[in-house]
Length: 157
Image (tube, rainbow, N blue to C red; front, side, top):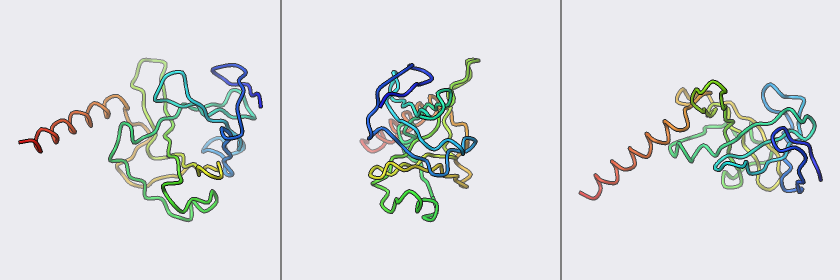
């Protein structure tokens, strides 16, 4: 299937790349069908609306820069997409790339949860005060890397 994308023009996708969000994504509730694929720059992904070429999101796996990330999601939120086993879910955060040179941030308060098998997704809303809508990816990656190095040095003493 060929789709028009915001960043890459027309591209060919396969059925496994199609993701349906039965309730849409916050602010884009009317758009239900998306395609996911690797962005040109890793570790990012691109989530492109199939119905609206100008609606697309940059995504990242939040565990890359926040290995301590925890999602306490009510099981009822995940029922519509059929997730009962966390191992069968893909977790992504929506990334904001400002044009003014501000830090690139990720939304850890509103993760996207996608059922690997059914290809259905939902945007959860977390109430844990640790998770905000703007986490500086580079700063948190650097902080975790430094903290992991300190912990590693302490265990070797």
